[in-house]
Length: 322
Image 1: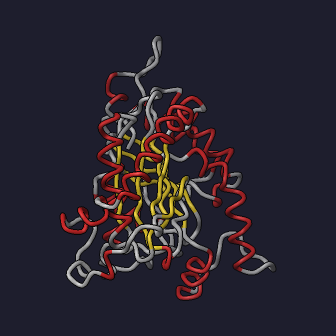
Image 2: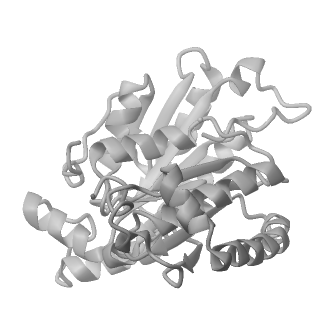
Image 3: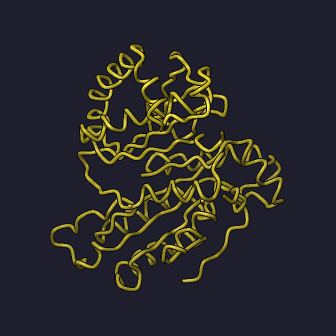
């Protein structure tokens, strides 16, 4: 099936495993081949980077279907299910152009899961000012554009797509990502196993001076700790180096903070699972996102993996700014 190219979100700076399908239900006519299929539903805001992501999936050998009318999604699900060898890897772009996006998303997901295919859902977004700039630079029309103007169209689109975002397995804020970084973010989330008793956890270190990540569910401010930036021999070293790690984690306040955080997450993560949440993004921020937040995110990731709450991915947003 031919791919219709999006014109409105290809301007990410050059520099860019999914939940496995659910087990085939007992009594289903789905074949074993369906269990080996990987289907991605790619959604998000206009200008958020879906065209760049779709190209990435094409490069990975996925059949990419874009801008399909909502009325044809059920037929597509049937086609993908009936020909698992032909459609072993499929990425379906679904957004406001489909009409009632939440209804189309629910119908598509339901049709696939009814055939033993559990799709992984990616949702791409960006800050309002970034989206406005991208549309201004490309001079492309927003799909909801009317007399309200671009800013109002973006607000309306966020509201319309919020139900889809809430159901996404992976939410990515592309505001400050290069194409290479987007590629890495997607790669790190492909191949995650689906287990209703576990959470897919993403940790993001960031700098408050560059803004809080949009996709964060929990945000922790670690600027109360002593800053390695003011130690001349540590200033140019990141939180990934042993010297900075020892300086940050060696502070009694850092150890106390981690103890409090461990206690909180030991309580909260099972509660999230009990409420049916499948993903959680935890952001830790310091001033520049280069020292304290990185060291603490790595330490927290080590502990989370030891506890086996679920797959853990780590992304250091400001690592290459220095």
